[in-house]
Length: 137
Image (cartoon, rainbow, N blue to C red; front, side, top):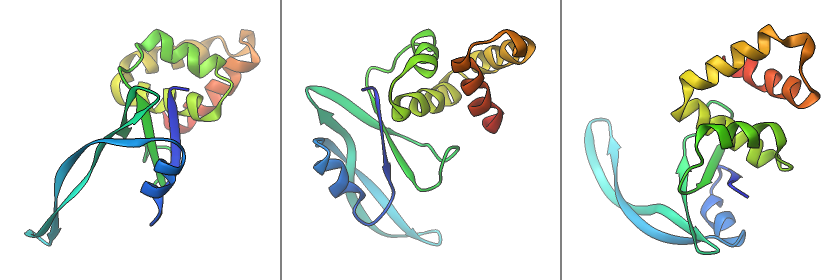
């Protein structure tokens, strides 16, 4: 498991804890009313799960109502691509796609173009990836 999605709600933090994660560290976040700081609150910066550190990644390209946790250190592009093609879990496939989109956009676009060119000669897994990618590109 490299990625875990949670639905954003009033209980998201409780859901994360219930799934076995614990807060590793906190950060201070300013809350604004217009341009004026109304107050500062402490929110989780990252989480711990089975000895690994997990960080939140913005996944709004996939869903505005999602919270994505990613295991650190992040996988390199080739391992993310393989995870996208071969992972058994939807969270890992989709999380790999989000992280590639955020951190390896140029390489992701190159692989997408290559799949489009080979459209008739690609595997079922690659066709599934092509469909996912076409929704982002």
